[in-house]
Length: 322
Image (cartoon, rainbow, N blue to C red):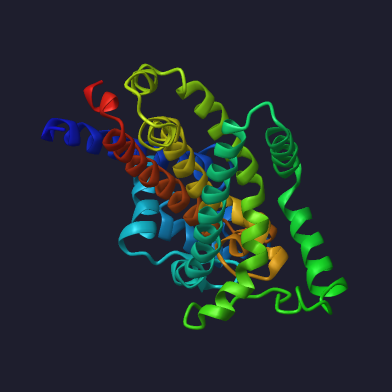
């Protein structure tokens, strides 16, 4: 991969990030119409507050000046505040990020491991009872709403069945810092299971289909014709090709989990992370936190997918040649 390739990738990344920033600006400041300062002031605005917001954000100036003021508040001066309760937005997000990352990354490890494992088992045993049973479980997992599953798990495992020794160690919610690893893992156990359930079922179906398709690839048939053992063909050829779609899919799902899916899980388990903060902002029509979370979430997803593209090209030489 030459320097021209990396220059093109960097240019496309910058272009996508710029497009996201413009889209966020248009959604929050242009499309709704009316006075954006009045919307940003929250549910109970007063004339002095609205006038100050209009001055700080340049809402009485051309649109390109307003765009520049938004980017300044978000990335340069980083002085974004919530006009609902006069709190600083970015410090609040920084305090919430460790909780959200702990939830999203832990769940991602679980759904990636079990999704690939069950998909491989189902693909190798297709048409048998293992394949049928895993298909039913996958469809059930994909169909269950996350927030409903979380509420049911909390009721059964931390209340109704909590007296059983098998479940007595499970806390009823909250978050413990990583400085206490046992408490940290035990408090996040149920949220991890809840958030990963849907993705496990989906990943297992994707891996199964990709595995079946890859078995007819030229490289796999050549390896079989050379007399290589089935295990070696599976590990060195079939799995390597069949897992390539998982790289891009995992990048999308990880970014979505960090940027949005946790909104459905954190409030259920009393985790005051980024998702709970976003839910509170929506409930109070607090636009500055929503603007920041939308912008940072979009940027995070784009950067994660850029790394996934590079990883795919490293794993598959055909993509590099293309």
